[in-house]
Image (cartoon, rainbow, N blue to C red; front, side, top):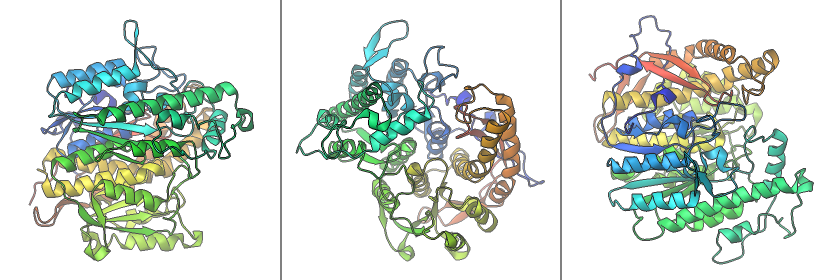
Length: 585
């Protein structure tokens, strides 16, 4: 179990090429596995960004990832089958036991999602209002006591390296969980986004932050009815926020003591707002409690990516790199979407600092980041696309490149079509554009910087290279083909032909096999050109000074094992199979 990769939950990724002469793909049972150091990992939940994509990244760096049983960290939306027939969220007590088992077995690397360990997952952490944790077989313990015991036990071994992943609660709970409706979400988000007074104390604590939750910027009480809420709804919302903030404070105060130097705390800001919202004082307070080596950054679903990458960088003595950042679109000085709390350029700069990257001129850079923003002038969309694509062709293609699509859907499919027709997608170090804009920066940079560092310091094997190819292909295919093409078709199909809700296939219950068949057919059609591009691409296999610059041909790819992890259309999982890699010439 310690070394199990939860294969039933993830099924590692496949791709279907259209080259008639392609090599036969390998079944997953024959995949080479990493034989390097092991990381014990407790995921935030069971979505692909928190499970299989973390596996890919870890294995691409030579690590092995151990995870608990999926039923101990899975989230079920309303009406869906529960874990152990009773739990709608993860099982903190079982997860505690699992982590302690890894410690007893000699593990010394940990990446632990605190929202999972104290609340049963990200979604549940937005709703829980008390400190009790059920114990299987009867009885309860406290979430605070559980965390105290876990941290103190792991601190007893000075050889342990422990990354603790935490989050600043987003502005409203999840629709479709514990009865939450879209109307509830919109009302609570408006309440949370209302401006609050700033903390005026020189040394505040969590209680001081919570004392301002119910006040507007004028110091007067925000009345629930003004937001279409009841007092009970507001009370539950604020109680859940205060509980979560208090638990974060408890962890930060714990690691400030002697004996926790090998611990790192990485906090992500969940869906937010540019407004001076209820998060403002929480963020300021938590930031004030961070030690050197800790960080608070935008994005939550990319936390594990950032932790794996930073763990590798620190273990290999990473000394940083000079990087150029070029924006195309003209809106980098504003948030990439309505759920970011800072301008895109600021968020990029904070992530560069976290990974030890120094921004420089393009001609002096060892590594570059290209970012497509939302268009400042809608009439110039094609110009922005052409300018960026030209940087991925010819001599410019020799520079290792991280590509970020922060256009938030404003370019439709035009950008992806241009990239597919005119560039070698497989030569990128990393790409991100799928899911929320708040996480694209952290996702792209964590994968890209990790790959760049690995090419300088890592021992490449078939297992590391195949894992790298999977994570790049997964990012590109889901964004180019699913998000902007297939998902749009599925949304209309589920609503109009099945009479269902794309956000939950169980309420009302619909023909899920029909939805899966529609997904498979849509992906088969939409992925052909992208798969063809990848299969005719070359990937960067080595860089100076570790070796001479070299490229290797991509293998044939095949996609299978499509699934909807939360039985909703928002995201998908899939398996990627590939043919054997060609020998290094």
